[in-house]
Figure (spheres, rainbow, N blue to C red):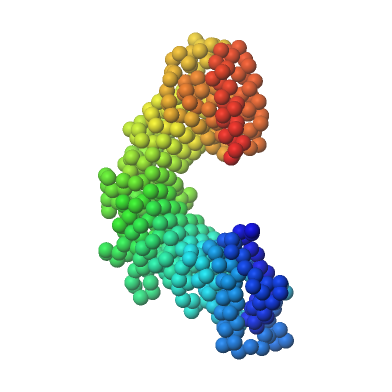
Length: 473
């Protein structure tokens, strides 16, 4: 039996009652789809003029809408997700207050069929009637349409008591503070919200307002992604969720760093469940630190026990990366680390992996082979590396080469093979799809060379375990 069902209808037929009549007659009379979990309703809207008017009074249209929704509920008793698509078949619709009201009524009633509602871009456009009441069971709200975000923030306020996730993206100016501040000055609480993601490329300084003392709008937040200017002068977003926050992705600049330090947001032991910490920068903001080492000291002071950390490019600093990265050696809990655009030599990488005993995954540029000792020949390099450094990084398994970057296949293959000689469980190198085949051929070719042949059984795992894992992704 089908688990997904798509129905295409004329919106005017829903208002007039014709759609209900169609769904109540053969072959649909008594028809039900008890296993359907996903319902997709595609509404076609014709340009409305006098000759196309359904001719029914508002009470009759509203009754027809309610009866239609009831019939849909009877046909799909187990539906858990409803998606809607509205298309104008002739041209843009004429302005009509009744049409807006009918659409709002239809959408809100349809969403009450399911226990948990997801509202995304297209559906947001359907429910933006200024007089909209809370949907009642809205759990997930997503919007990436420029110009609609302010209305979506209002919709979030109306459904604050049921929302579990909010994801808003825009390139236009948006006052994010209105997410928790109503027009009358009161603050809004989202008691069940566990994920909040907001990404905006432009937000004016006027958004920086002080929230109420004691306001705790997100008491159960587990994931926060804020790639934007922090919209408040205080720590209101972080209040009350220190014991629940697990993932944080945040843009750092002088203003937000000063706020975090002033309110001691990340005091020791304040976030015991924090697992993933991603640092990012706003491109048009000056860094708050003059060098990479100072930034790293600040970054590592924030929840030092987090096992997963993602760092941005450190090449924007004047000093060399490795002295700054050496500060990571104190964070022995790190298991997954991304350091974008940082150039590591093979020798740096070995020392780096050695200093992080729990590290399993590293996302970085392809390692280089510069700095080989002068008395070591190319043929003797594998034995020198194996005897000098092995074993290190017993938990290290994967090197994820930073996407869309240039590297020499032969040099990368040699570095990977040498790394496999010192890291006993390393068996997977992720490269771009375009260069995957040639890279694996280079690995295979070098394993057959005399300098690596002694270790062929160990190195061949790079051809099988890693290759199969790549293919499965």
